[in-house]
Length: 552
Image 1 (cartoon, helix red, strand yellow):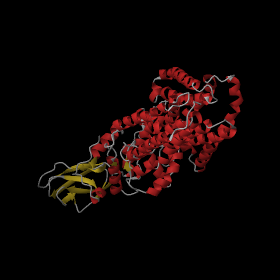
Image 2 (cartoon, rainbow, N blue to C red):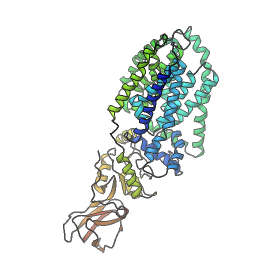
Image 3 (cartoon, rainbow, N blue to C red):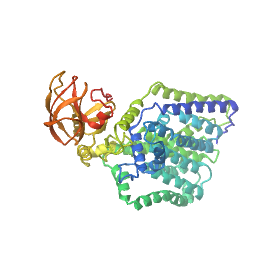
Image 4 (cartoon, rainbow, N blue to C red):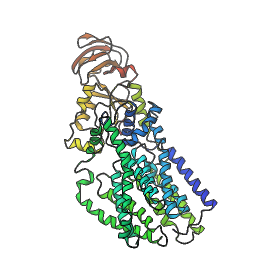
C-alpha cells in the first residue's frame, strides 16, 4: 500500500462538501434527467406484482425478477400517481449510496484512507455513472450487490466465510440480472490471471491452494438462486421464467453477434488490461496488496473487454458495475507511492470538478425532459379505469394492463423482424377492446403503426380510438360513412355543441356501441368540425379538436 497519510481536516471538509454538492445534484436531476424506456418496463412489472399477477406467466418480462419483487411494495405504497416515476427514482438512493460505500471500502482496503475519502466523490461525478445511477432500473440493485461482493472479497484475507458471503451476494445478483454471468466470467479471469500479473511466487501453487474456496462461493450463490427457482416452480411458472428471462434473450445474430470478428478482439484487449493491472500492482509491490490490486484491475478490465467483444448488446447502463471498480484503481494510481505530500491533495478535487463540468455541460440544470412523461401518465389515469387496456411500447402507462404481452425492447423487436414472433398487436387490441394507446409509438412495426394512425386520434399525450369525420362543414347537414376497427361505445362530437341526426339510420341520442365495420351518419351540429370518438374520452373532457402533443 502506498504511504498514504491520513487526510487533514481541510481535505476532509473539501471532500465532504464536494460529495454533498454532487449528492444534492443527484437528487435534483432525478426530476429532470430523461426517462429511459427500461424504467417504464420495470415499473409496469413491479405494479403487476401489486395486482397479484405473476411475472413471466401473467406479464411479459425478460429480466430476472428479484428487483421487481423487492420494489413492488413501494409501488403499491405510493399508489397510482403520475409522480411514481420520481418517487421510485428517489427510492434508488439507498442502492446508490450502498454502491458508493462498497467502492470506498475497496479503496480503503487496497489504497488507504485518502483513496476511500475521494473514491465516492470521483465516482459520483463520472457522467455515465451520475446519470444512469439516477434511474429506476434493475441495474441499480445489480451494481450494489456486485460491488458489495467484490468489496467482501478484497476486504482482507480470503477464507471460506468470506467466499460464502460473497457467493450469496453474487447469487442475489444473478436473481437480479443474468448479465451477472458476464461478471462471473470476469471474476474467474481475474482470479486466474492475478497471481501471474502480480508476480506472486509460485503462482500455480498459489492457485491450487485456494481452489477449494470455489466450493463455499458456489454454495453461497446457489442459495438465493435455488430459493427463487423453487418459488416459481411452486407457483407453476418455472417454465415461464426460463422462457422469459433466458430463452427470449438468447438470439443468434443479435447485436455484436452479427460480427464474429469482434470476439477476436477480446484477447488483445485483455492483454492491454493485464499490462495496466501489472503496472498498478508494481506500484504496490512492496506490500501484500499487490495481488489484490491486480485482481481488482483485472476484474474491471475483463468485464469491460468481454462486454465490448463477447456480449451481444453494449449499453451505457451496463457500465454501472464497471465504474465502481475502476475508480478506486484510478484514485489509487493517483496516490503517491511515498509519503503523501499536501501538494498532491489538489488532484482529486480537480478531477471531480472536471467530471462535474462534463455532467453540467452534457445536461445543463435548466434542461428538463420529464414533463411529457408525467403528463402522459396523468392523462392515462384521468382517461382510463383500472380494467381498461392501454397499448404502449414497454409498459409506459405503468398502472394499466396491456393488450399484447410483447414489450418492444431490442430483442423483441429483432424477433418480430425475423418473424420469430407473430405481429399481433392489432388483433390483440380488437380482442380486448383497447381504445387507448400511448403517444409514442415509433417502436411498433409498420403494420401496427398504420393501424394506430388510421383508427386513433392524438389528444394531449394519449391516442384515443376515433376519427375526424369528413366532410366537416361550417353549417349544414353533413352525412357520410366511417369505419370502426375496435368494437366499443362511441360518441359523435362537434366543436360547437350537441349533435342531432341519425347514426346507422337510427336516431342519434347519445353514445352507442359500434361493432367493427362500416357505419353511416347524417347529422346536424353547430361549429365546423365533427368526430366520432370513444365515449369515455368525451365524457372525461378529452376533445378530438385539441391538438395532441407532437411526438419527437
